[in-house]
Image 1: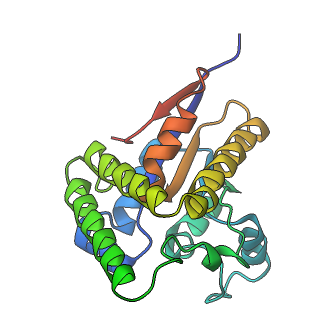
Image 2: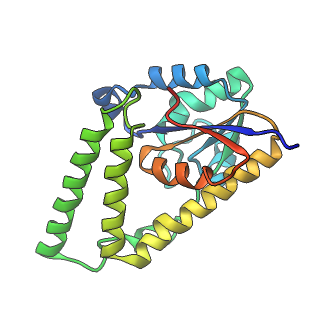
Length: 215
């Protein structure tokens, strides 16, 4: 009988000012990682950027570089604790900007959409504090789900490219990482906007014990 695979999910934010304001600091992130004690971390990093990092770890500022928490915490922690790292993100950088969900709008209409987007973000921020780990809460996830349903209604094609397809690939890369590291405890770390989708998609596997939030 196949053993149940244990996967944790940790949503993070990519900007240090927001980390400090919300309480989801790098110190707390480190604490949560060590508490979960993974043998593998699947991170929101492009495979090409992971290869670039391994060759030139001090090269930063390029389009497609990993989010700052990887340079400032996760990569070094993986090396220190001998945690295997698996990059799982997917973005086609040469055409990403061409699929801006507001690409078909200019002037006042675009400003109105941007204001609506900001209103969704404020709802997310409010929900982010309604749990033991900031941004890893049911309230945040529901607000996020509503935002992306709205974005889908604005431009279904952009949503398909930037969101639906991206998550199919991210989820498959997590599953492939689990195959490469059988029976090892895996922690998935991604921007908190991805929480609800990864939770839903990874939770469909009956052989997976999914832990979210981590505490």
